[in-house]
Length: 174
Image 1: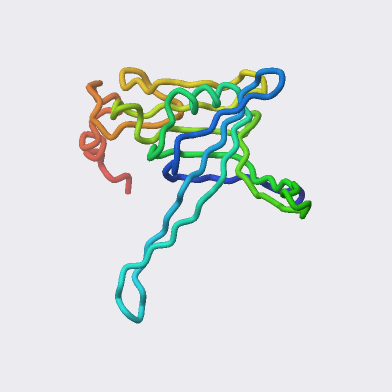
Image 2: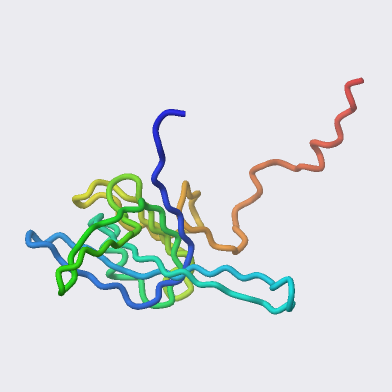
């Protein structure tokens, strides 16, 4: 197998309101922390156990930063697609430190709000370029969606797939 893949997919809850900073030329950078949890039953005691992991997410995509700034708040459930990056930095005492982060930039990044704004359904942002691509798409049940979040409600559109039981009335060909 030639090549490699660096892709991270997370579904989790935002732990605190996102922090929005700006570069010297005015481009936004969003920082947020997302918690993912797994639960299981302990084999010996039968008790339910839970383990929570915290992930640092950095958004460089300008369109996705606008979504984060306007709509993402503490407790929001998000679907994130990005890449792992480790950066080296020095603390106040001059020691080298390393931080591994999930980075959303360019075309390979996605941020989808799974619980929507005020319970109205979800919205999705897809990464474009580092300079203003991507953005926010409000979920609309009245039109077909090629991606983003989907609401669990029933559609008012008629069934366009035909009548399934009528298709089963055919004679067996042997």
